[in-house]
Image 1 (tube, rainbow, N blue to C red):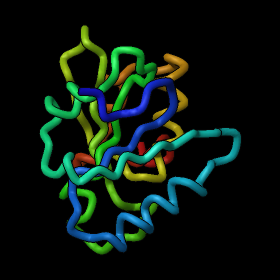
Image 2: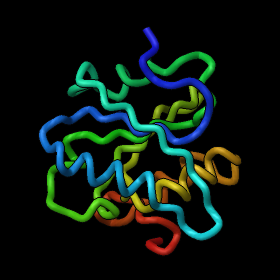
Image 3: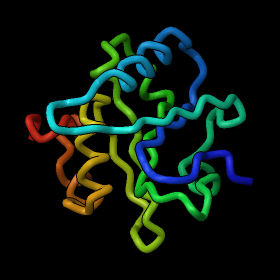
Length: 144
C-alpha cells in the first residue's frame, strides 16, 4: 500500500494535523526556499491517514521504486512551538535498508543541504546524526 511518491527528491510527510496555519507556512517556505547553488524539489504529503504514524509505519509506505534516501516528517515536534517556518524542525528518517534506521531533527532551512548531500552521496546519514547540536537539532553547516 504505497502512499508516498516514487522517484527522487525531498519528500516531507505530515503526521500532525493540529496547526493548519503553521503547516501552510512551512509548505510555502519549503516551496520557495533555495539557498545559493542548491536546488531542491520538495514534495509534500498531506494525508490525514498518516496522523501519528511511527517511523516504521512511514518506512512501509515508501514505494520500492523510490529513489530518495530519507523522509522528512512534519510531526508533533514540528508544530510544538511558535517558530518561524525556517526554524521549525523536521524529523529526518533514514531509509537505507542496510543502515541502522537512524533519525535526527533538522531545521527546515537545512533541508536543501541535507537533500543535496544525501542524494549525491557526498555525506552519509550518520554524518548528520553526528552533526546535531547540543539541543539535538541539525542547523546546517553554518550551525556546526
